[in-house]
Amino acid sequence: MKFFKLFAAALLAFVAGSFLTAVIWFAVIMGIVLSFGTDTTVPQESVLEINLAEDITDAPQNDPLELFDVESMSIKGSVSLYNTLCAIEAAAFDDNIKGIYLHTNGAGTLSAAAVEELRQAIDEFRQESGKFVVAYNDSYSQTGYWLASVADEVYLQPQGAMSWQGLALNVTFYKGLMDKLDLKAEIFRPTACRYKSAVEPYFRTDMSDENRAQMQELASSMWGTITQDISAARGISVSDLNTLADNLSVMLPEDALEHRFVDALMYEDQVEELLAAKGVKRGYDGKLNKITLGDYCKVTAPVKFSSNKVAIIYADGDIIDGSGITNSVCGDDLAEKLRQARMDDHIKAVVLRVNSPGGSALASDVIWREAKLLREQKPLVVSMGAYAASGGYYISVPADRIVADRVTITGSIGVFGMALDARKFFNNKLGITFDNVTTNTSSDAGSMVRPITEAEKRAVMRGVDKVYDTFTKIVAEDRNLPLEKVLDIAGGRVWTGSDAVATGLADMNGGLKTAIGVATTIAGLGDDFAIVELTDLPEGFAAFVAALNAKAGIDMKQTLRDDMSAELLRQYTSLQRLSDRRGIQTYYPYAIEIQ
Image (cartoon, rainbow, N blue to C red; front, side, top):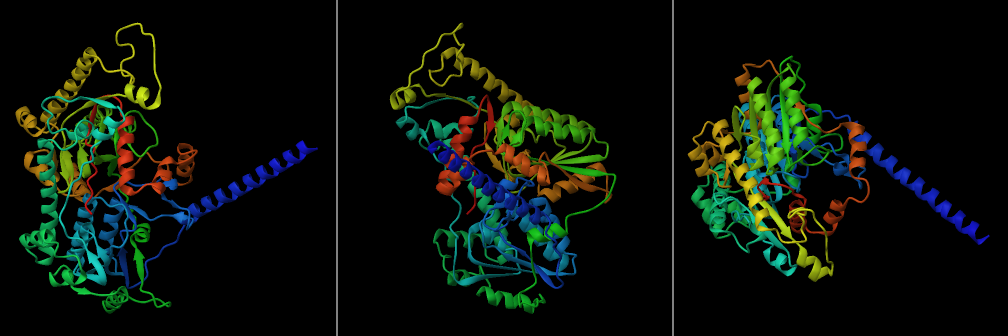
């Protein structure tokens, strides 16, 4: 009898749990469906509000489990950079839009390169339309202010704050941790690749002289771009901007007003009164007619019909071998996408948007080959985003033209390999030992539980040297540069987009829209073309199902995100990527963020 009572209780709990789970999933699915089905219109005499709480991503995002907000049961705001640029262009000619309100509160995803392109688009909006651009924030980060400075008028909350202190590029080193854990990294790097610093954190405790020199040049170049833009917009000399940063003279709202960073100190309701005075209408509820960037993108998605297609293909993320639905660039998948574009007679030109620090040398070569074949048949233009470094540069070189943002991180023409000896860690820290039998001297090569032999070191170095030799030669051939010059600017050294043009690694500075213009010009299309975005991501409900299959079980990344600070999560992700890497790498590991 007792058994049946326990069984009945367990059965009831199972049924109740299953019902509750079904209800939750139904709510999630309905939230997604409703989010996709929102009917958005543009009110007359409204203002386009650009708020950095909305994620502006380099490539289209279509993973509902990443974008779904459980609290609101809806899709979180996320728009692609291309759609953002198109929306701002459309707003210039939209009679319903009186101007742009840059309300930069929020911490959405926005790279330095995206800020540059967004800022340029807003500047063009001002010049072409004659409409106003007003910026307001409770407090300005340096990134937020760089963007806001393009506005006609910049306002700050009277009790807010400013960040103006210059750039610092920080590198985290793990050598001390590895020593404590009895872990030893064996590094394989060509002698010429003295700037290839990807492996330094695992065998050094500080920057090498070469790495320090290139990081300093990166910081100086990026800071130069930011200060020059702000100087031109606000009428403050670059020299004064640097003096103010050195002395931390712009921290309080009063400082920002005194030094002409802002035009006035206002509360948000006062700024809204100012917008109303500029012609923005209030609705029946008394609120200003605002439309968010995400909503405006929905109603201004570019629709143009032409038999001439210009395809945008995205290489967004680390480059890895094989295929699959991931947040990385899968070598086989991207190669197939390039192949499809090559075989499609309606596609007259291709823009490859590269936002990648590189990764697998093998996958990079697979992609490079297809890019090379595509260029032989139709124009190929590369648009570089935040990164097009190492493997990201490898896949870019076949292009007819390379267009880079001024703050793009590119180059890093270098290669490395690394082996991890974890035997003492297992033995001394965990009490685990290993034993085996082999048929040949190096049958167990690649094992982390014994030191690598001299013969194995020589074999790995042969592969590393071969990849570097191949890398430099294809750069020389595809970029039409003397090999001696390539070897001089290679060595694993990274450059900003501004410097890349000077060295010959890129052809011009500009963003995605510039690259599209170059591609249509080379193809001789005039205005008779339509843009198509080729992605590997499933759409709609299929994307939801695919995401469920890919993320069944506990989402460890989300769990860690909840428990870790952003900085710790970045460090964890860096170590995780290191442990996942196999084979020879063309990779630039540093994530550069402008605060």
